Each structure stands twice: as C-alpha cells, then as structure tokens.
Length: 510
Image (cartoon, rainbow, N blue to C red):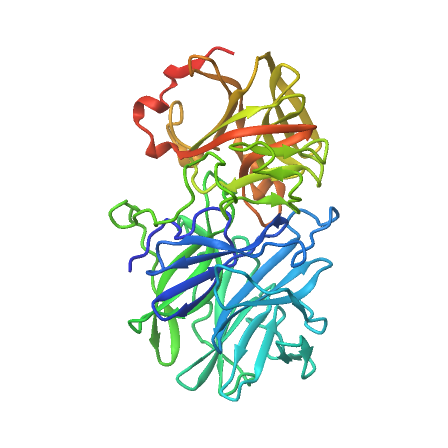
C-alpha cells in the first residue's frame, strides 16, 4: 500500500468510516441532502475503491423533505461488521433522528431502518465488547448502551470525554478495543482549517479515558501542507497486521484564505503504535501516477448511454428521486427527466448528477428539450450554481451566486444539442494555477463540434468557503419545465484527454 497527496476517494465523499472483512475493505461516507444516501465502497488494498451501491436507496429508508436545508440530511455514518452482518448507523438532520440499517451483503439490499429515539446527537458510533454489549457514542462525546436490533436504550447517556480543553466541536467518535485496551478516536477543532484528530484510552469502553499526550495525532492546522482540514478519521487493521487511518481532508487552492471546490475527500495514512498510542505517519506528497494508482475495476463509466435497466450508484439527486420523474424506461436508451421545481433555486428540482472528483474536467451531454426546458449544471446548493440551459429554441447560461441571479449569452439553436461544461484550474492564460480560482466555461457544441462558450465564470463562488456548508460540487442534468431527454452524459478529466482536444482551437466566437 502507498499513500499520496491525492485522495483515495476523490470528490465529495466526506466523513469516511471503514471496516475490514477478510481481505475486503468497505467504506461509507456522508451524503447530506442527496438521494440515495450513504455511498458504500469496496477495496482490496485501501487505495483503489469502487462504489458498490448506497445503503439508503429507498424512500422507505430515507425521507428528505423539501424543507431539508442544503448540507442537512445524512451526516457521518459508522460502518461496522459484527456477528456475520454489516451494521450502519447514521443521523438524518434536522428531523429524521438516528437510524440503523443492516445487511449481509454491503452491496445491498440493506434493511429497513431501526430508529433510535434515545440516541441524541450526530456522528453515532457502534462498538461491541466481549460480552456482546453494544455501545453507542455520539458527538459531544456522550455514550450509552443500546439494543441495536430493537433500537432501545439500555442506559442513560453519559459524558465520557470532551476532547482537548478549549477545542471546539468534539465529534466523530469511534471506539475500538486493541490488545485489551479501549481507544476513543475523535475529531475536534471544527471541520475547517483547525480540524484535527485526537485519541484517548481506557481499560473499559466507558472509561475512565486518558488523553494521548501527543494530541492531536493528526492535524495540518497552521501549516502549508497541500491537504488541509484533516480530521474525522477511522482506524482499520489490514490483513497483514498493519494499521491505517482513513480521514477527510480538502485540497486547498488559491491565496488567502484559500478555497476548495470538490468538497471534503477521503485520504489514507499509515499508522504505527508507540507506547500504546497510535502514531499517524506522514502523508506522502508525491504525484499520483497510473502505475501506482490504477483505475479500479467497476469504476463509474466516463460515458453513460443510459441503456441499462438501472442507474449506476454514482448518480445522485437532490432530496428525492421519484421514478416517474427520473426514468430510463419512458424513452428507451434515454434518460427522461420530468420537472417538479421551476428552477435550480427550488429545493424540489429534478436533478441527476455526479460528484466532481477532479479539478479539470469536461462534461458533455446530448440533451433533447422537446417542449420542456432544462440543461447541464454545476451545483453546490440552491443559492450557488452555474448552468447552461436549453428550451424554446434557445440556449443560455444562468448563474446564481447568493442573491444575484443572472441570465447570460442567449443564442438560437435547433433540435437536440450537446451541452458542455469545463472547469479549469490550470491551462491557457493561467500561469499560477494554485494562486488563481478555477474557471468554469459553459456553452454548447456547434454542428462542426466546436465549443461555443457562452460564459466563463469564476469558480471560487461555487466553493464552501464562499457558500458555506459541508458538500462539494455535483455536475448533472436537470429539468425545470415539462420533460427533457438526455441521450448520453460524458465526464472526462481534462488531463486524460489528448492535448489536441483541450487547446482553444475548437472555441467558436459566441
């Protein structure tokens, strides 16, 4: 295994929780206001991950009403394997409370949720002791014994540790028994630049806990490391006996104060043990190369022609995905999106997208608006998005940045049109990519294949440093009037394209 300054799971996959079964590793992440909820990934080496499915993939499991705020919804799951089953506990904020689902196969089908009304607080953790007692620990850091099958509490909550005195937001607890000693790993300092991971140990799962004298055992606060906001980690022992930590971080870019546009991503670091304490090794800063990090088998396809019976699990929607509004069968070989909300500003908008997982990408989609209206969008939330929209014989760009909403560059078009979005953090005219925002180009392709750029916009406004929140960019198609059809969707990293494909020679004067 090797580590890198590149994430092992790129894009908006935060709050990782990991477990091992034999030679297989499984990972779960937060999904917030997106449906389906809680992506489940698989690996054989902790480096190359493939998404198997989503744990909460049915409306009976996950209800995200229109009033669920952006960056609300499903927070910080814990994934564990115990007694021959997978157990996943998480919280649905603000109204859904704590819920627990199980499965024999992590690819699904996961059970209907068991609700735990007595477990109050986010980031719930599960751990079993030698007697089979199940301990649940939540942000705070409070702990109680539970019956995970019935969802009932077997004790009152008890504060067992509050982390480093003066540090804000003790959260993300994970409890482990290692060689007879209990270790409590937490995140603290807030999930921004002050984020870090600390640990304490005790002779029993409920304490008393002794903090590690070297806390925080991981933090990049007050450093110039390319990975920032490091925290919310989970430990796992590999089959060869080595120990590893998965944790979230961001690839910060730009000058002061810096920003990240892809969201909080999942990284990996080695762990050794010294004097009974875990020691997190340095995160290597060498380049990620295809030889060291080959593309995993079963990864999301670069191009989706919507020919299969089901959507790939990488596709996510905003809050809900009614089958009558997102269909692969209404028009065979096409994705049909039927409008609910009237714009991307609407929390009920019909949207289907993929997490942006590289800084420099080209996304293209062949869209037939018919009598409807819709397009291709880069979404952060209802108040921060850019889109190239099609309908009524015209194409235009719509930009929303907080209270400012503007329509840009309307042009007449005929028939189905290939809509196109590119994001550049380096390239023509960008001599210092780390000191510049990325550029988002939006437009469509002319009949000869040339790129008609209708707008070139500053990408930093689609970052959480500007917009707030916990998510990252998602790029996808949407409908706002009647219904639209999408024949195919193509997502490529610009670095993977031939240089001849990415120079400006194909730009058409708009």
